[in-house]
Image (cartoon, rainbow over all chains, first blue to last red):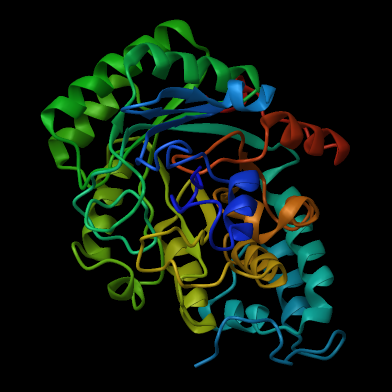
Length: 65
Length: 346
């Protein structure tokens, strides 16, 4: 698995700063499954993030997890 | 030169010539903004005088702008791939940023405007990461603005970079209510922030916008390595421009940008800057914009609203997320601050 903020492997390195940013002000930028950079569209009330290999995620789906 | 902090001990309450006593008479009573030297004095006040400075700035805001808060939403129509090198921006195509290029289609643009209007916002700003609009973007703006004006009860603003006179005239003819183009920082500091165009080029666009009858929205970002002297310089340069609105952003050090290594501005420093900018521009709409979530948190946002701010961007920004709009609307309700109605803006 990969960090959605920095794209690094979650199993290695310290991702506390990444988690903080993702919880406060950042949408995911990297696919958690393959670390590809995603095409992200932020709109006033949410976001969508599309990986060319693993498809689209939305803020609504993320909120339900 | 003084680095950005509030621990330089100057000014004592009650003493003759104390800057806040001077500001009370000059700004609150007469409505005359502080000079550059006076703004610097405010920025250099010791931290223990922050509450006093914010209280005065709030009094000034209510006296000269009234009680209402202007709410706005923004959306990125064209994200990333910008040819400019603004060192704070994750959308520059010149940096190794994780932000990839994206375009918003018309239906999602209109939907974003509808979502924004539901919050009670009176302004919806369409933003594109470009040096200036090309013909394709101008056509998208024409179609998008027309669709929003047909379906949504909200003023439309745009932020499309530097404009030609012909583009200014076309935007005005489309019914664009306000144009945003930030000077970003003091003229003396600008070359440290942007090298692909000049502060003066931005100033020229702003003059054309005003002459065409659109409202001028122009602010910047606090915490990009400027000194307190340059921060005071910037406040007065903005005041000289006489913008209708000044959005105040606080640096978000984004990965891949040249400013990724800079620290997030400290809350007290940011709040003193808000107070100082209000005392420099007593009659201007002063808007909380990006970065306040990191710099100020929830408590600091309230302090800012009670320290001279009279407008707010609700919801998300262009590439970063904001607090949920409901949280900001609840804050305004708690502070008993009414939201400006659309018919008050026309």
